[in-house]
Image 1 (tube, helix red, strand yellow):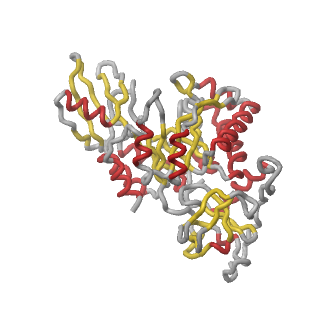
Image 2: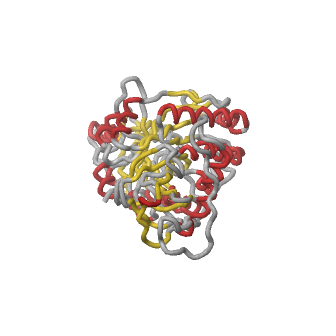
Image 3: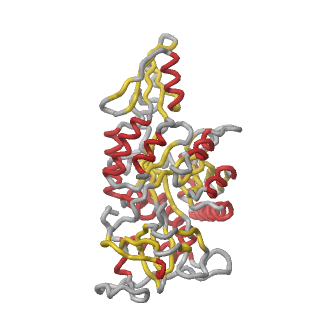
Length: 445
């Protein structure tokens, strides 16, 4: 979908998902709403009873504190409260209820009497930027992500705990980080349960292919993901399927449609992490299965994995050079509504053996400590706009490229330049501490 695609297309997509899901979970609560009729005449004077769907896309704000519900009526559950003057965009109208975009992503319904409408029609939601942090626990007692989450709740809008894996039969298993979830709830952040296809230490190609090519397995995965989100209180899901065979492009898209059909009527977010590319490359390994245009229509947010431009085996080079990141974003916004696009931020680097081209991942602090230990000065790659240096170890020259607050500041300018939805940081606990000052200054003023 092109960035300037009308909001009407989005309305249709949302209601297709609603109609596929049928009744809400259990026997209580109203039936999922049917699509509103779209009035093609000129808008009539604004009152609660005659505001029409022609105003879809208009800027608006809460006239009073407002309960946001999962559907157009007081029988639907409240998912959050928006304070007076909170900016939103209108999506659709059903009776005396408006469907709106939420400031931190996703959609909800509010009573029209609580909405103040103003401004010209636009095609994107609020300019509020998302700052999503990938949350990990890599070993028993690992608190690196938790400590950053606790310190930076004011800078983050959501976390995506790297929690659950899915099997070829659709079984979903993993860990629930209750301490992190309490912090998230207490501070009004969103939580996205990340579901991946790692088996052992690798993204498993055969397992994910078997899953995607089996209708019963896909249905089981959708059912199990839905149960985890509702039972554990997540706001949505982040699908991180990697090493998907290019030939599975159609069934990957189909799975995401089926997942959206189950989750969106419940007010749950559907997001996806996708590998970086700057052309469609539909037959290329690792990236070919990801149809940016189709996935952009389905998902509420698409997290670009704009990192690992160079990695172990490729030879030494920047993890995410500024020109390469911009090239990926430029292609992405030609395919995906730009407010849905989140730029991936690497909080790490690699330390290469220049003889074997093998590399080990390093955090910002590890990279800086290695330079200090070996008495070398950290340099700056003018083309890539990232820090780097070389040192000797065991008679071998090693080369380090990594990310810092300075390289982040340059990349964050792309968020503004391309007017995208925000950033997603891989991962919390690896970054330069000064990065948070840069994020607050660049995205939250």
